[in-house]
Image 1 (cartoon, each protein chain N blue to C red):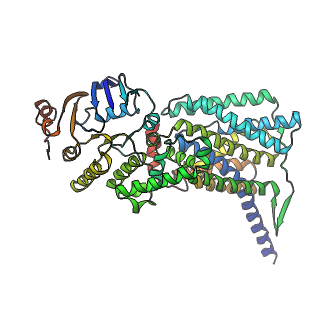
Image 2: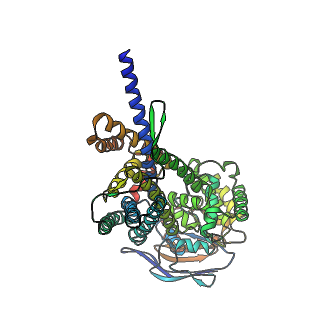
Image 3: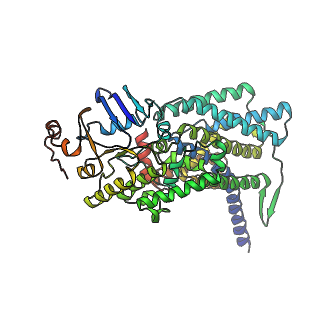
Length: 309
Length: 251
């Protein structure tokens, strides 16, 4: 009887970890979508995606600290700040640099990263700042399981955004053009599509997604540091690589897998192993399944990536 | 309609086009032939804006289009196919043709996202019509990458028909095809593509050139060496010399 109860408690822990993992993984998935859309359109990595979100969040928290802005204002400022920073990054690292100069623009997106860090530190020179909590707090009990309200909001918003992104990509002319540029930017040009314009719009789109994801993550943690940029880029890239570059369902699955593995590791092995587990998983994934979990067209995509490097 | 004025193009130390001048009348169908590496595709790439010209001008409909971006050039009514296909492999056949309407009406941001019911309906009808013309109506929901090569080339033709351009470049439309497939392609081009348009066809299969072209330009090592009617051009000594060692199949 005692053994059964113990086993039941262990099962509850395990499932609870999965629930928490899915909730955080949903936000990872949004970040991975941001990376994957830009990679799809340009075949280049934008390492500054995380730092752009961090800077957006710093604008938000600055408004909160100095102007005592309400949560919805902080949300709006965070998103707007991310979009403006995203446009800045696009103009400097991608628009200005020749389309086939893959390495050059990746390196310059790394240089911009440091610039964005500096701006954040100039704005708020300390290390850690409070980030206002969401409109909701508390949580809900489902039998033996507990879900934080912030996590529930994160999950719901993620589902809504994924549906929205799907509709945008498959039901609108913009989506058709964006997919066309991702598939073959040469062919797209001869259809009268201007890849620069689509890339610019794609940057605004992923900045919107990133701003929302950043807000959800920070409002759950209720604090922000300049390292948030690094954190976002790592989590987003790992989730993207896990799911398969250029695949949106892959990005979501990669995010969920990463979230679940992290929470399980944290529970069973402790906090120190949480981030390490992510790298172990990435390493294993790259060795065993280099095209990602949804390894569609692995050869095709690697070949493409190769030709462009 | 289209005049190429002394076009030069070099890649590094190699001059691939040395002062090519060709005048093309409205409604004409011109074959562009020559041995491998003679600069046929390079010439198309320069005219359609994929590469810039190092010297010379491209004048289309009285307007200098040299140095414009390829999306601007294609918006001005010029379309092309590719020797090594440039389709959208992970999109359906219908979506491939739908994408061809992009930029035609100059959509603004609102229309890009929310569409324009009337325009979109016209586009869809036009896509379906274009697929019927090339005989791909039954394949509309397949992913493009699952089609065999001859059908992929037909899909590129369908995209052109949907755009309804005034000037068309076909770069080896029968490349990699069997004799029967080549004949079917020649028929498709002669019946659906060239009527009412100005066309330039690059092709190694002389049966196709003879079937659709009224005039043939021969390039060799970046130089225009002949510009004649098809029945004359392959008997010219300089053309025979350019092809020396190759057998000319004159259908």
